[in-house]
Length: 180
Ligand SMILES: [Zn+2]
Ligand SMILES: [Zn+2]
Image (cartoon, rainbow, N blue to C red; front, side, top):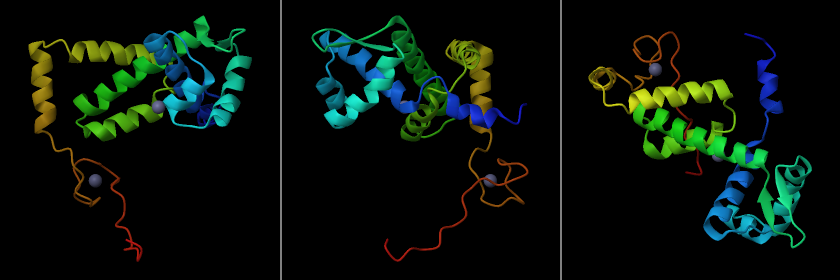
């Protein structure tokens, strides 16, 4: 594995914020048939000004297209990216929540954070995995039961924790803060 991979994180195809702009526009177009800067700002709970600024690079890259009446649309590529990120989000939420048993709210947060970072290959393999997971085949049901029966909470002690193996990943106890 290349030592330079961590740097690629910064050159990802789209930023997390860009992904949410594209998804918001897609949703507005589906719900109302149009998307103006005001609508996007409202949907994302941000100011109109910062919405305009963030849309600039997306327009420049041809992902978002503005017509003469200042209505915004997604280009084919913009639409493809929005769909891909939406799909990744759905698959990751299933992986974290249903497969790994992460609390539903936390699974949603974790999925949201990384939805725009998956490679096409990882996304495709994850999709195939979720298809098997949802197939209700007896082997899959047996595997689900096996997973449930295995310990999955951290004992908080690297010497005895069966889950974290060689290192214990539980956070260290916080020094009590006076402002609690
Ligand atoms: Zn997100
Ligand atoms: Zn542990």
